Image 1 (cartoon, rainbow, N blue to C red):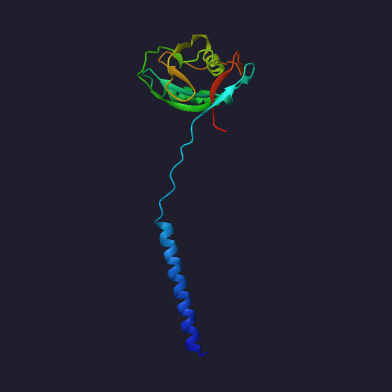
Image 2 (image 1 turned 45 degrees about the vertical axis):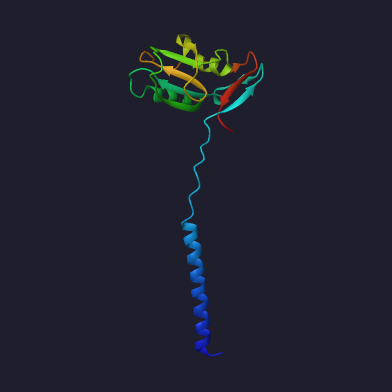
Length: 166
């Protein structure tokens, strides 16, 4: 085979590889991006009577019902610093709260009682639907800070709690 024929075959093979690489690159570049997968803030977990519930087992959502800017975020950070899992936070006009309240349909739930212990004796546990994931804490303008509460709560009955996803 002559020098010219070998060069022509080599150039043809390289050109074919270049075309294949360009086609593959174009199809990869124009594929739709994968959809964002939203992970839930918490998942329902069954607790048997006598089981212990710890802060890391409980998701807390905090809402500001007052006029103090950033209050819900500061209180949420205090809960996170104490080991609780982060739920939702923000402002609400759904109800009047002067100091602090927990909104729940299950006032004797061990997760609710554990969160209530962090709020001291001044917390008002209202039987109503919560606003966010887990235990809903609503703070008002008179709220100052969390207190050193219980580090665990023993379930008095079988219950369901909203725990961070595993």
